[in-house]
Each structure stands twice: as C-alpha cells, then as structure tokens.
Image 1 (cartoon, helix red, strand yellow):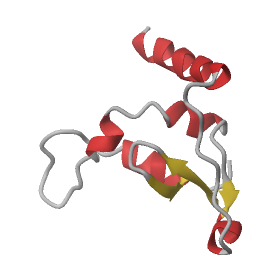
Image 2 (tube, rainbow, N blue to C red; image 1 turned 45 degrees about the horizontal axis):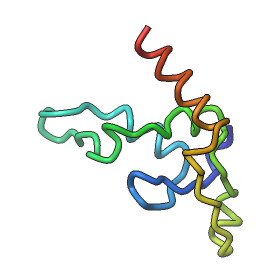
Image 3 (cartoon, helix red, strand yellow; image 1 turned 180 degrees about the horizontal axis):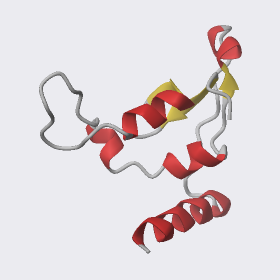
Image 4 (cartoon, helix red, strand yellow; image 1 turned 30 degrees about the vertical axis):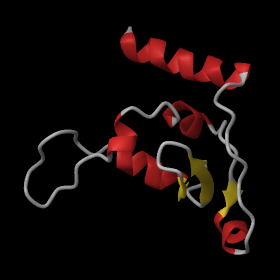
Length: 94
C-alpha cells in the first residue's frame, strides 16, 4: 500500500496518512521513557488497524486530499468490514 494515501480515522476523528496510523500504533502504552511519545488513547482500543493494513478502508491520494478531495468514512457496521476485523482479532487472540 502506498504511504501517500489518506483515510478518515474514526477513533481520532481526523484525516491521516496510512503510514502515520502504523507508526502511532507502534508506540508503547502506559509509562514511557523520557523523550518517547506514548500511544494515543484513541489508538489503544482502535479496531481500524486491520482495515488500514489490508487496504479495506476508503482512501484518497495525498495529492487529491491536498486538492480538496476527502475520503469516505468507513462503515464499521458493514458485514464485509466486520469480517476483516473479527478475523484479525481471532489471529491476535489465538
């Protein structure tokens, strides 16, 4: 997936690049060493990660975003997206 893709992050209620999403979730939770950034509260319980990783979240290119085009908001209640999320959660648990 191109790093120059923008999507709407529902937990943070903001537009962000897909690579920023991946960087934010790699931050440690809880207390962190001086100079390090903790994971954002919205990222701690986020279920959008599998959608971003598999490219199932609606995106637009960075150039289009800067030109005024905004990506659609993912419908997390749709059956196909719920399957992707559930499959990811099963892999993490098992």
